[in-house]
Length: 299
Image 1 (tube, rainbow, N blue to C red):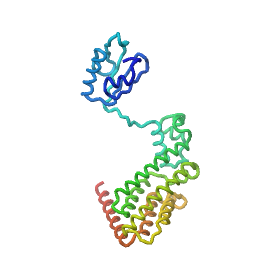
Image 2: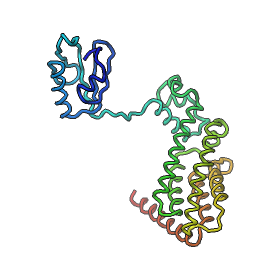
Image 3: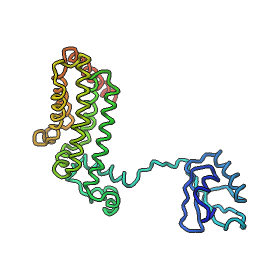
Image 4: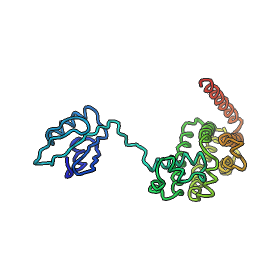
């Protein structure tokens, strides 16, 4: 196992996924991605059969090999039975930390220096992965839009009817509202036009269709009024939802973001429902209240 041999040869020899680390031409380390006792025993026999005398053990053990085929080299088998392929990459770490800081303090208030300091890395390292703050903001927005689509899909799939879908959305907004600074949308619009345009398109296309589908579902079930103009009300819902981000109307010092979101959505729902739907809304609200009381007692 020397410089003339390849990773493919090593993988074939051990029949295990492997990564070779070689800092010099005279030292090679093999790191199996997964390794149990049976694999290890079989590996020792294959190693012996293909190379010669192998002394089983951990780091720093020597291998006696046939000189006519190989140059004598020091080989280290590094056992990593729990080696993960899902370790967070630097680019993802940067995006995640930026996301956390943006949601807490707003986008404009957080500099690239702040992100670098929180991560314990230089700003130069960040610029190796993101050319500027705009690109980093784009990455954060893309992540949130993807998460939003996933949450919308789950709310729809877990709902027995259109009213319950709205109630599940309220729960989602309550969780989201505890981890977001309403200044985020203002900062996007004023300072990061590309990311804001991406958000607007997502709202006007994907979220519009989600809201329209919910209204049509409720009308078909008799839970929403039959005289509703689906197009107008779907757009109305999306635009009124943005009111919660208006810090001039609802300053964070006086209003909690999640409370504003839920109050606006609840008001919208009451305007949609028929008498049958109204009865169902009250039932869901009673269930939520009882659950909150029960959860509070168990804490």
